[in-house]
Length: 234
Image 1: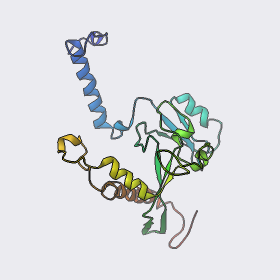
Image 2: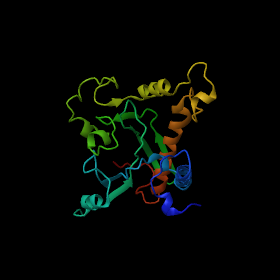
Image 3: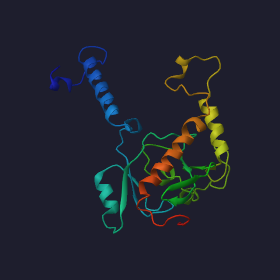
């Protein structure tokens, strides 16, 4: 290999000499990161974290931060438990907006685990378009309690075509079909790595994963959940 000190110096071009080797080393490091971290592709070099109280509701006290001192400052003077988790810096966006699914489930028994999953979740959007440099709540949080303070909350959004930053599932399915449909008279090479274009991505990919997440999440707490059959808890 080359001298590490020489490799760290500025190079006139990445198409010849030391520049080629430096570029290849960078690609090798990124490939290694992708191999060891399945969520590597979700990061975008911003070191963004979300910090929130474990018992919080409606987006209260949720902070998006980028350094350790901010994480400690957020939770240091509180007696309750806090959650700190890596932020998805490259989220899937709809018309530039972050979104999430509001999924309702009914658990009628913990042992054995019996779960009913509502098939019509709705979609909640952040009020402003996502910007990786913006740590504000209105472009990072999808809670109605945050969005309702926007001046245009009660107006029909130009791109989302609804009031209140909320979609029913049929609108999201239609957006999927329009966004990921297979272009006419195209071949596989035109579609990049996504060979599922043209399919019903909701039924073939997203919905099965939602059910898997629901089941795995409930199974992880089943032994600690109180109550037996036919109990109810909000």
